[in-house]
Amino acid sequence: MAESQTIYGIHAVQALLTKGPSRIINAWVDKQRTDSKVNQVREGFEALGLHYESVDKKTLEKLAFGGNHQGVVVAAKLPQEMTEEALKKKVATREGDAFYLVLDQVTDPHNLGACMRTALAAGVQAIIVPKDNACRLNATVCKVASGAAEVLPIYRVTNLSRTLKWLKAEGVWLTGAAGEAMQTVFDASLTGSVAIVMGAEGKGLRLLTQKHCDQLIKIPMSKEVESLNVSVATGVILYEVVRQNTLRVK
Image (cartoon, rainbow, N blue to C red; front, side, top):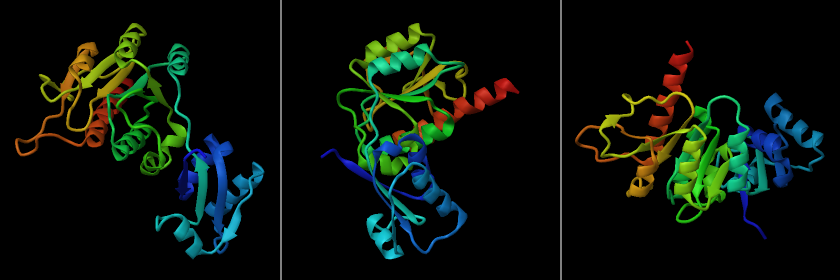
């Protein structure tokens, strides 16, 4: 049987109802909650013809492993990763500027989930990862992503170098994060169609990947700190993209 995930909380469950209701296996709702937020979830299940069980709070706490379930818990199949061909179609049919996040050999599921959550918040349209030596979508990733995995597509490509070269040909400006870069994230131009390229935990961005980038940037830090966690660094850079594009349209 395919791996499943446990989703809980109003926002995460509503995201699943909107984007992937066919993946729902089982659902449970607090029988004592009659407030509007939980009732909206009930109505969502009923509108889609999905069965749910009314249970007590203790049962929900057990199902959610002690997490903040807010009265709703769902067991669901994992979201599907997208193919390289699907990425090509998405890029070819995009409207307006592109905003992608490329993760080069990020293997920790907590980091991938955190990157997905931040990327969705910043308005990233897709995440691109290599086929080999990279974490796959699993229950841990989805839990950390807090609903982002239900909304933000993740594309797995066979050859990352080839994909980066192709993105450049499609007019996407590639910006890689590297500690040895000369310019800081705040000095670089990050407007227009961009893809932010981040390296693996500890190892950073591979040299071959760096060579395909149009520019390299670094995050200025005090001498007491050698590096940032990849998900934290991703957040800093993605929001600099947001800041620059916000100023551009004013």
